[in-house]
Amino acid sequence: MTDLTFTHLDEKGAARMLDVTGKAPTVREASAVARVDCSPLVMTALREGTVPKGDVLGVARIAGIQAAKRVPDLLPLAHTIGIHGCAVELSLEEHHVLIRSTVRSADRTGVEMEALTSVTVAALAIIDMVKGVDRSALIREAKIVSKSGGRSGTWTRPED
Image (cartoon, rainbow, N blue to C red):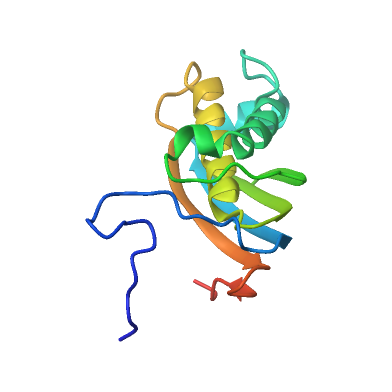
């Protein structure tokens, strides 16, 4: 068992933002994936471009990029960092939409939460866009799949 240090708690146990002032900026990258399970009706509408609300994948892509830049507004202990790159890719699989976001920065703290927020908000945008066709769409999972940079180096999720 490893020694657990609660970096976001002060000496009295109150939540605090970790001070990263002394850390040197380094290039950091994180990727996350999410999937939105959809009915055959929705998948057909997505493939044919006939969802009444319009360009579902385009809206989801922009929502994901925008979300990566808004993490400090959503997570109270997250640092404001420069997002220097965010690529959101969406693919239509047999029964779901697969979303992948890769976020890059050259800053003092990692971008895992930015990547994870990116895919989850992109997934929410898909749900919002297709709910008029079929309300059964659901977000199945969202997870970090890799990260690099910073003190802890490179990590890749083992194959599921």
